Image (spheres, rainbow, N blue to C red):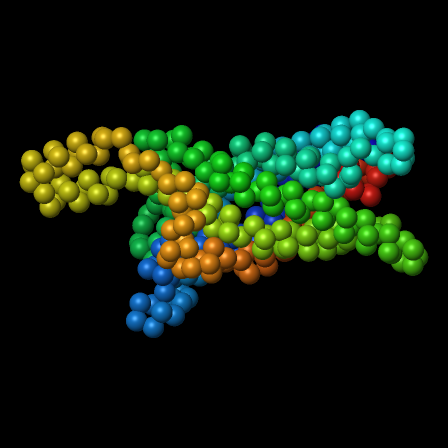
Length: 341
């Protein structure tokens, strides 16, 4: 991490995350709604099966606050871990005497470093991701003095640990995504920089470094995003189901008070205290999606996910790269711009 301190990495990662969250969040909301099992019921006109645009496009920033709060430390943790693991593996990667090459190819090091960093990041980000996706589905057409995030948090009041229920699903999506994206990204950026240097086009400016990084990251991210779409669809459904716990039964109990006799109410309350049914596995959810919508159901939102990931990844790593270089140069330090190291 020549020229960069841990503070530089944390600040650059936080600035990058904040910038991306504000700009691409509406596209993420649309993706969540399209992948939701309630998409047809909530966002399509029943008679014509056409999109109800006023409903689909309303409240696109619902839940953004929780993500901004959690994304700042999670992104800082990701980049700190990524840089540390990559630096350690690179410095301790022995030479093979027969070929004078390294034991571990650089793409493998990038994949290992990004995967470990993602596991750390997901532990911080999971609660916010669960809150975000459930808040994105709150019906904003109904008049309420309580915002979507607060309404969502109320569902987890009696079972806050459910906020971490989507950790495995989030890690299961992000691990293959980052393992695909970062080796492609590092390779693409190296090729683009090498091409520009060979043709004497390289200027060495901060703007050039940011643009090359953004283009490489955006391209690699969109490819990885499309490939991992089926995992993302399953992850979305798991996280939306996380709110269906004890706290989400308050509305049903309230309705029971008005429609059932005292004896029936007693039975209903008794049933509410019973152990909840076992939650469905990722495989079961995948089979349900196939049964409901066929193979297309697993790729729902793939094009939108690819588009917003291209924009988001390009901005994210572009701003991060520019930020860490600027912070180092501001102190008068030189920095290696050939990789995120």
